[in-house]
Image 1 (cartoon, rainbow, N blue to C red):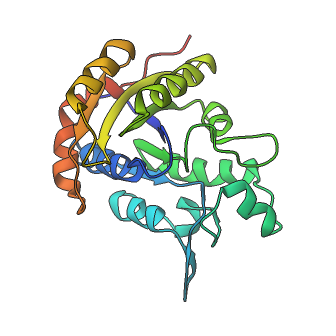
Image 2: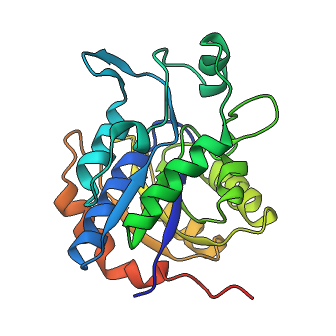
Amino acid sequence: MSVPRIFVTGTDTGVGKTRVATALCAALAAAGRRVAAMKPVASGCESTPDGLRNEDAMALLGAMTVRARYDEVNPYAFAPAIAPHIAAREAGVSIDFDLLDRCYGRLALQSDSIIVEGAGGWLAPLDERRSFADLAVHWQLDVILVVGLRLGCLNHALLTVESIERRGLRLAGWVGNAVDPGFERPDENLLWLGARIGAPCLGTFPYSVQFDIALAAKILSPTLRELEPIPRP
């Protein structure tokens, strides 16, 4: 297997990006890979004796197999559960891509595979000019799209796919994650998405209040080969 460098994005916030990112870590680790993960910017963090900590970043730290400090996995942590660019502005902080580069570089050097999770959706802003999409382009990462299976997901998914491809990045695959137990006609929606998204569906996660990382990794394991990078000219 070649070495994947993956950016996990979603059709919206709360669609299961962390579930997919941690499951990817577990599946790659089971395949014998040294895996690192990163949540570059996170809001909605809790105060602890060690400083601000983000639940998603802690889950990634627990799922990866290389040793790293929390502030390497999550360099920018903000307390308010608001859009990261607003949280950063209120904290008087500018998101420094050079700092993110250093953290990413250290993690990449230690690992065979690295999984980077965004916050919110694909175009969630980091500051007045840049978004998470710009960060994925900056690092030239392949992308996995998490589609939150609920009303409106068809439009959100295709708009996101269009934006990813317009930026010249490879959509390595997508995952359907059931977030609404009352969502009607899920099978028909999945078929529609599969017919219109050129990248493969890597798996579908059933609705679950309690996340089972082992089961999620088992769902993704058969499709890991789809993540092998395409050689760039």
